[in-house]
Each structure stands twice: as C-alpha cells, then as structure tokens.
Image 1 (cartoon, helix red, strand yellow):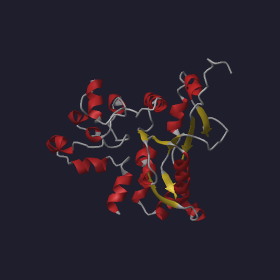
Image 2: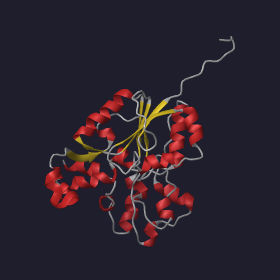
Image 3: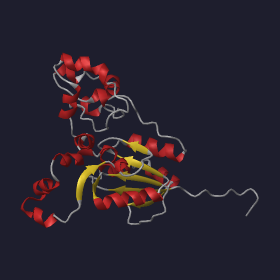
Image 4: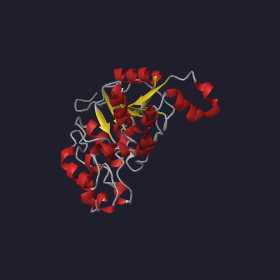
Length: 259
C-alpha cells in the first residue's frame, strides 16, 4: 500500500422489511429513480424484497414498513431490532398502526369472517392479534410518517442517518402546511378535518386537492387542543367527536383506551 493511499470505508448496510401493509411506502423509496444511483453509491442494500432477491442479516439500518398483526410477527420484529443499530418506522402502518387497526374494533373471529366469508373456518389457525405499530413491540429510533411516505422525507431521513444526524421531521400541525399552500380552511367550507392536531410534512396535499386531512401522519407530540376548542365549538363540534370521526389512523390508541 502506498503511504498516501486512503482506506476505503465500508458502506453502511441497509435492509427493508414489510409486515402487514400494502408496501406502498417501499414503492415510494423505489420511485426515487433519479437518486437511486447516488443512494447505491453510499449504502449497500442487503435485504429488500420489492427490489432484490438477495437476503442477508448483517445490516446496520433497518427500515420497517407495516403494522404487527400476528404473534409470529412480534418475534420477527424483535429479531430485526436485535440485529440493527438503527430502526426506522416507514410509513403510517409501522408508525401508528395505520388502517390495519380498523380491525381492532371487532372481535378477531368476526374480522376473519368478514374477510374470508364462508371460508373463515379454514383460517382459524391464523394467529391474528389486534394490529399495532412496531413501537408497541420494540424501540424505534426514528419515524418517517405518511400514507404513503413522501420521497423527499425519505431522502432527507436517509441522508441524515448517513451523516450521523437526527432526521428533522416536522412536529407542528398540518394547519401550518395549509397556510403555506394558501388553502382556505376546510372548516370555512362546512367540512371538518384533523389537521389542527396532525403532524405536518405532507404539504397539506389532501386539502390542496379538495379533500380533508384524515390524520395519516399521526398526532403531533404535544397537540395544542385547547387552542382549537373555541373554533370547534363555533361549528358545534368537540375535539373528541372530530377525532372519532377521523379514526382511520388512530385505531391503536383507541384500542388501548378501551382495553
């Protein structure tokens, strides 16, 4: 070796895993076509079912998509945590339990009957449990929110991790994004949403295109509910009533409250 030769630093090994989900968040990562060459020059992807056949267990960073909805998955998630130095919850299902937690409203046998119909008896052996986010089972280091995640936030989080920094994920309400987008508040249009207590970072895309915020990014850490109570009262609404009306992404929290 020549005296001035530099040692080549090994690239961090990254793995992607999916549990109960549609894998849409992983597809968002794969849709970074322009950035993929740079990503692959910086990391070694060793496990990613959506993209490669190779499977290795020597990874430092694990991106986990999907909620835990079977007993078997509890042990699988724990094994990933044991191997990974950093675990990132990828998307709503892994961060909050996501839409999968809707089944928690019903007895598991009833949920199986609705899904499988007259074939439900054939699936009694499945170890179905109430769906839950992965942090109900293991410690999660960082979260990338959304249903699905955004490409920009995924790239920001990955870059931050490679630089040894904490990803700067928004912790303010969607209302801020709405104002920045120049949107008219949906309450003024006779509609309701959970933007005042939902984590921003989506550029208020749903409201911008004529819908309302359904809360897919989960609650901000310290929602200032009191600041919005007067507004809700003006429209004959309550905080609890609005949250229950938009319970698509809050099923796990409701399940815990009702236990």
